[in-house]
Length: 79
Image 1 (tube, one colour):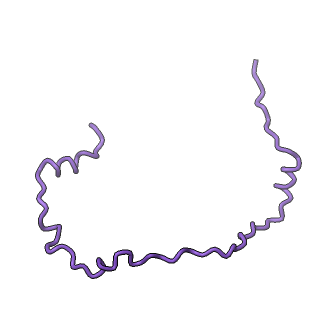
Image 2: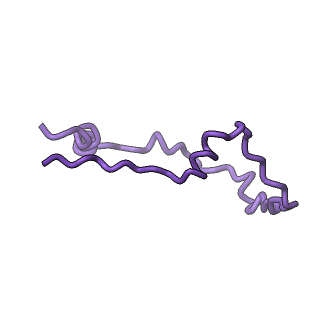
Image 3: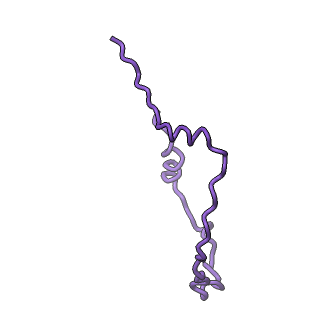
């Protein structure tokens, strides 16, 4: 015995509201007069003119074969 699918219907008032809408866009929210706080910048002014490290970080890195192999093949899907 086959069963008929139930039909979902909405209220008549909701249907009329959806069908008879005049296409108005929603209004923007009214401003409440709130502002953003004053930023605390610079928080550490002594660090603005800091020279930084004496040597570049890129020149002193030494990678072996194992970390390179794991980085290249570690994310590949299993075969």
